[in-house]
Amino acid sequence: MAVAFDPPPADKHALEGAGPFTPKFDANGLVTAVVTDARDGELLMVAHMNAEAVALTLETGIAHYYSRSRAKIWKKGESSGNLQTVRSFRTDCDQDAVWLKVEVAGHDATCHTGRRSCFYRTVELKDGQAVLAITDDHRHFDPDTVYGDGK
Amino acid sequence: MAVAFDPPPADKHALEGAGPFTPKFDANGLVTAVVTDARDGELLMVAHMNAEAVALTLETGIAHYYSRSRAKIWKKGESSGNLQTVRSFRTDCDQDAVWLKVEVAGHDATCHTGRRSCFYRTVELKDGQAVLAITDDHRHFDPDTVYGDGK
Image (cartoon, rainbow over all chains, first blue to last red; front, side):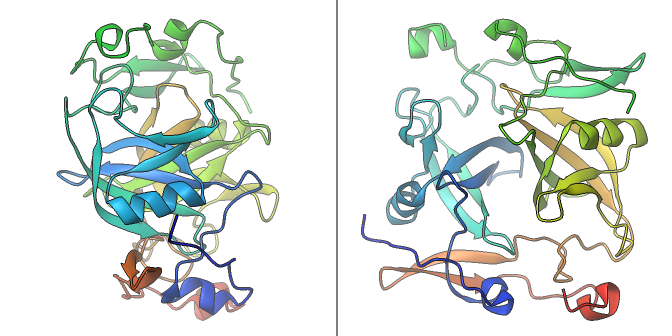
């Protein structure tokens, strides 16, 4: 990993201005990554990055994350072919979140369920209860075939 | 708080299907909230919600978050007037993140720096270093005047 990051500056104006990118990693060494489709702005997924994932993404132009469940670097799309080419990489005012605009290869799908976006369900109140309605049920691929484990 | 949430089901198909909304709160009792502008999809901010913030948002239609720095419920825009009316409320496959599409009142600005979005800077590699360039420097309001504390 060639790209390294300094710790965030104590000075608020330095933190919020131009200058070096100093990601504010949380207690687990992660920042939040929001991923939208460069084509039309659809929110595709939310994931996390450690310093290595941020560096790999900047260096290669292909999105890498940190899988909390597998506790390792996760090159998104390595199994499914749905790799993400990064067209824009932004950060927010306190540098604890990043926003990637990506082009998705393969099936044009990001969710492991085969849908284009992980956010395929709408939350609604019905009779005082919060319930989920499926807003997008189009499967771009069959997860059983692609992952081979029913995931 | 009238709306309550059951713990996430152990069954993966139940978790990923229609049915009750069962947010998967982290060790701090929070889910990640991604907030985009209902008008054009611009990413405005990333925040966090506890169960009370989720319930208040669903019940009132006005976005409420949980401020980790202040350790309390945060009705976004209460000081600045930039309240967020929620037009759509989605969740992702494992229900640990939510996506709000909002209409912003007041100055049409979400960032405490006065900009429309918190993501006003682009990260770029220059000579092997990650540096920030300011992509949007238009201030919709003067933070010193609105917050009165130079925040």
